[in-house]
Length: 147
Image (cartoon, rainbow, N blue to C red):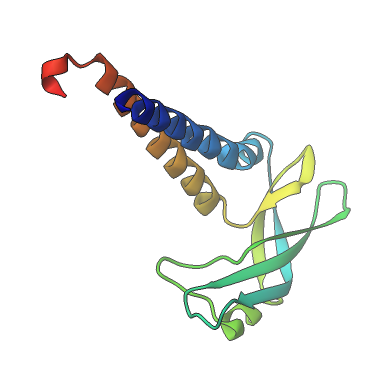
């Protein structure tokens, strides 16, 4: 049973690591092929489920002009500050606001208005997975008297 749990932890840690790398992929590509231009939040969408104050989602639709002067639209989670929870009114107030869009010049549909938040979440998942994976591997190498 002990080997099964260690194997489960190793696979789970590796899964978190790979998931974090996948989450960071778009942000890394945006930073490598960096395009920055102003954009406008053209629409917002607020979802509140089950009448709960904590179970809510907010999205914004952003439009910007890529280098070829073609308009590009994308949707993402609404930007927010630390410890901020959106309300329907606060999200709706974002409509028409000008934002700075970071995008991939070779694929303008890969874009974000929150590159720091996007990269932090991927890095956090990767680090947690990496440390769980390493701790599991390290526990296999310990002499039996230390376990």
